[in-house]
Amino acid sequence: MTPPTLEGLLKWILTALAVSLALFLLGTRFYQGYGDLRTQALRDSDLVGEVVTRLPSVAAEGWLSRLGPAWKVSTPPLAEGPVDRILRSADGKDWGLTLNRQALFAELVEENRYLLVLGMIGLLASVEIAVFLAYGITRPLRRLSWGCSQLARGRSVRLPLGRGVSFELSHVTGVFNDLAEQLERWRRVQGRIVRMDRLAALGELVAGVAHEIRNPLASMRIHLDLLADRLRDRPELEGHLEALGVEMDRLGRTVDQFLAFARPRPPRRERLQPRDLLEWTARMLGSQGSRDNVRVVLEAPPAPLPFWGDEDQLRQLLLNLGLNALKAMEEGGTLNLELQETPEELRFAVEDTGKGIPEELVDRVFEPFVTTRPDGTGLGLSIAQRIAQDHGGNLSCRTSPGGTRFILILPRQEEPHEEGDGLS
Image (spheres, rainbow, N blue to C red):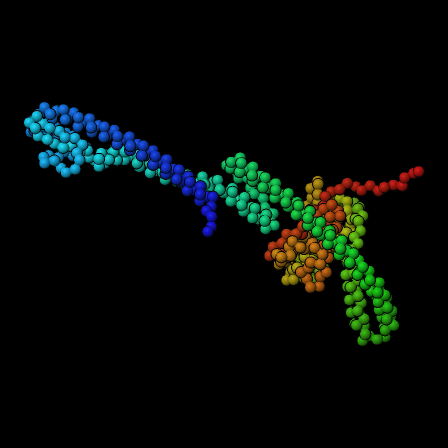
């Protein structure tokens, strides 16, 4: 059985309180009014009774008619059932008086008809107010419940501090946002720790494997070049030798990637112009973009402030993002290279108009060996993230069915100081 909601309970409680208060007020008014009418009717019967005892029966009947609808008058033989009073004329004739409670109640309702209408209007208004109060109280609680469910699913969420909310609920919402922020930081730290552990383990394995492959591969390349020199007079073999050379070079680049992942070098910082990095990336991607029907668009301030970084590593990072973007647009599109700057940081963006990254891989794109291409190694983004972190920055990803956007944030750092040789 589903338990009742808090909003439903509050609606029932507030409505019951409103109905009880309305019934109490109306009941009190009717009780007092009925008592007043009954008292007045008894006084009238006392006055008429004093007069009737002094008059003959013919004259007394005229006075009895003045009692009005509040009394039922019965003549001999008296009506069956109890009577409230018996009046006797001077010549001995008796009349029975019975209080007509229905007539008193009808008169009471007639006198208070406007009060009844106002009471019904007030009751309906009270019910509506109860509904709005219950909604106003439970809405922040429902929002908090929704936020907790999102946090339990691993999603980052912030709740707005609504206006007109009580101090307690506003304080609870603020505490929830602080908790969500701390939890998000903890998740990022935990993710980095897990990633570092994986990288350390994979780095040792990859370094050994790449080293064992690189040496015989270099020997094979040397002997292939020697063989090509000796077989220059065999043009029918030229295509085969060229194919072998291309595949060896591709394998060599893959080994270099593995070694760069396993044994990263620290950045060698120098003074760089951020626009030059994007212009170089646009030139490198321009020819391939033209072949793939992709338009490369560069958006950057004309003269951004310089910063300190490793030019080769940052070129590698941006070029890797650009190549991934080109491969994501198989049917053509637009590749946007953007630069935004503030006095504290630089924000590079590489955005494509492809189909986006599958939802199940969005949170794992920076993990080693995670790729969406059958010919990819899955190390490019992992190396790019490491380069960004080595520069004190961060690389993030936003994707949708209409494209993917990678954002590189680099802080502006002071000029590095080289340590000089000390004199003894």
